[in-house]
Picture 1 (tube, rainbow, N blue to C red):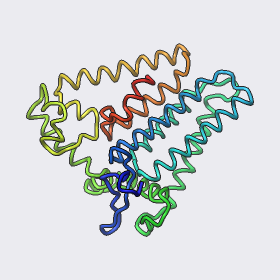
Picture 2: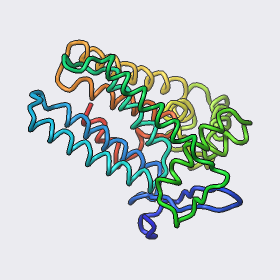
Picture 3: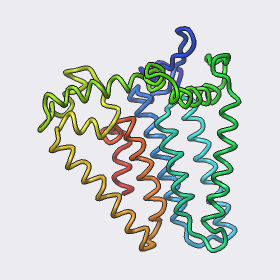
Picture 4: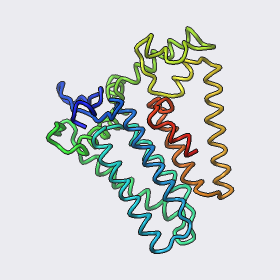
Length: 276
């Protein structure tokens, strides 16, 4: 990802003007790369959920498959430093814990294991001192990734400027988008007009639908999201095949869409629609 042909146009800035290259893939966009990464991770969990008979051999296959895909996500996240991809994958795993159905391992026990794991992970994050960390290219990417996670979490309790910086300028962009929508409330400014005319990238599918297609398009988009979610929830209640993994992946995608325009990514959005 450090080659010119795979590096992202975005960089991770830290310290006094220092920056680190991020993976961008063929679209040169760390956001698109991160969404492809999170989508692959979610689809891999769906494939694991398709195994109904959990014999010893199947358990070994599922564990090996899950470990391999977790490693791919680990390497990709370390390279792209995509916080949106991290929240997507974390949401997917958390929902899988919540929706767990097993006679041998009750859901409550899974929740306890998941909660304990999150506490250990939080303690691990807190051990990093971002201000004194070396986040340069000489360090493993995962070190920089953990440092960015802690930086973002810390910014939640700080001033708006720190939060905006931690969100890569999204807070300011979202405020501008609201102002632009107020001038065209019903039908919006038109599809793709936001980046082409105003130089702003949505980085939020709901806001993007509101600004570019107005209240009418936003209503249709939101109804569509709610309808798909309700159908997946109904399938889960009916105990249909792999319905828990599908619902978990979809909710992860919705969380991801709050900080990226994921359903406009041509390299990864089709996989989501095919899976659903």
